Length: 402
Image (cartoon, helix red, strand yellow):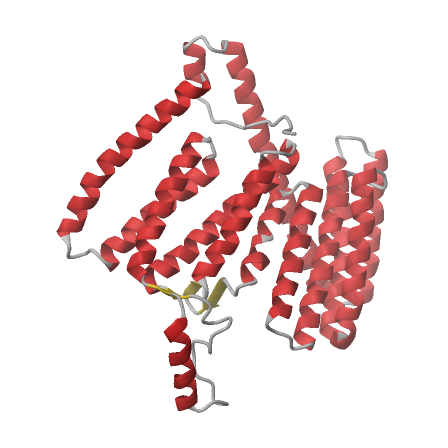
């Protein structure tokens, strides 16, 4: 059964007022609410940035576990008192004090464990973070203890402590292969659930990072260079496409509160999938080479001749997609998705699709067709019937929905 959905749209209130669709007073109310929402976002962003800076700055400035614990406890208690007695006018100060105090206690404990008790850090942080998150999550769902802002922030602190412990455990127990796939998948699920529970879409978006890393898609940084890498672009695109389709379908069947999070996950999956397609369009892909093949580089524990023999045997049966084929398939996929996003009013996917279409065109212009003027002639003339087809399709959709 489909649930009632709220779709946020962009509209020119001035033109709507001139056309007589809405009154001037209604236009002013819409504009005032839009300004209020933007101002609220700016205030919350500034507040969160200040809380984080004050929390970790104080921890490193004091550099003493007892001092951090004492001051953190005092600030947490003071913040809770302000929230209970201070009223709405001083609520922001109460939130800030409570969160800085809680952050000092949780963050200070985590840093102390990592720095001085590394051997037992994972054993303490994993259950400790889970306990903090569970308590805050219960309070968030059932109400009580303090404000939802503080409850949600403490829940996220607990999640960070828990996943930090998981990361240390992985470091202490050198595991790889499918075990790492499960670890990354677990982290993605935890982040997505925490984002939904606190209704913070930024946290939900972060779930895409470990999800993509399940197939080693990620980034690498070294001096003056920030690199996106996707060793298995085809499989990563399939993985991210399944997530995108699932999120679009789920988003059409749930309430707006949950649909907001499905949309951000779908958008992030689309963006990362396009980055993978960019890699494939430049280098092509030998599907599965890093997963079930001999790998991309020779290791010293294997003779070069033996490695070359394994590589030849794998390549004889492997599915190889050339850069040219990748470029064409990516272009066709972008055309279909941009058209669908435009007709279904999915602005985020539409904007991302148009952006990557420009990136694709720019890349191929210099990579493949810099000295091929005929390619521009063919491409230019081909866009005319394509635009006409999209226009007729839009007319059909409009007539059908009228």
